[in-house]
Amino acid sequence: MITPTHYMLLSAALFIIGVIGVMTRRNIIIIFMSIELILNAVNINLVAFSMQLHNAIGQVFAIFVIAVAAAEAAVGLGIILAFYRNKESVNIDEMNLMRW
Amino acid sequence: MAQAIAFYTIAAFILGFAVLVVTTKDTVHSVLFLVLDFLFVAALYVMLDAPFLAVIQILVYAGGIVVLYLFVVMLVNLKRPPEAHRDPHRLTKLGFGLAGAVLIELGAILVSGYMKTPAAVVAAPAALPVSGNTEQVGWLLYTSYLIPFEIASMLLLVAMIGAIVLAKREL
Image (cartoon, rainbow over all chains, first blue to last red):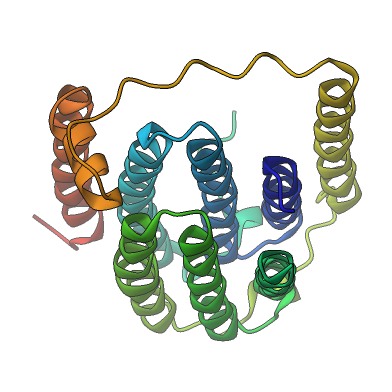
């Protein structure tokens, strides 16, 4: 029997993999993909609770998360392109223009 | 039993492809593993009685967002891979440490969740006047969550304009 706890554990594992990707990679495109993994982990949680509570509100929120993820990807990739045009690089170690 | 087999298979694929996304050197391979990961998450949504969300996941994530990523990966023609450049000030160990801290935090939440007695089952939600997954989601989106829905549309419009402004060479 698969309980919501199983889905929560899967979601937590996916979240951790995303966090490790964000923390350790230098390629900003991979970091953005790790953020998508994190958002997917959140969505799995929302849909699992939606099934547990027998209503569709969790799925509605998952749709909002997907909409925000799409907006985030569009703007983030625009920023990557603008940065690449200036520095010919997508390495986050070189993104220090606004460091104080 | 069949449900358990399906869950563990899908979970193994999701986690395996997620690890590959994070660890692969080649960015294009990483994007392709991301597509497979999204497809298996969609399969998980089908298991969770959310077929509408599964279709949205495939259309928006595997179809739209990943194509956007592929375009950017093709556009930024990397002469020197980012991983080749080593910054002496970079704190990779600290990164792993912080990820471990998040892991410990999640574990503590799970353990403390087991300690507590489960809360009484929430009262049955108000029955919607429609049946069927897509109808229910649509009903909620256009009644209770109409204002968030409109705000999401505004957010997408603003993101679209912002992406054009950022990516265009000169306006």
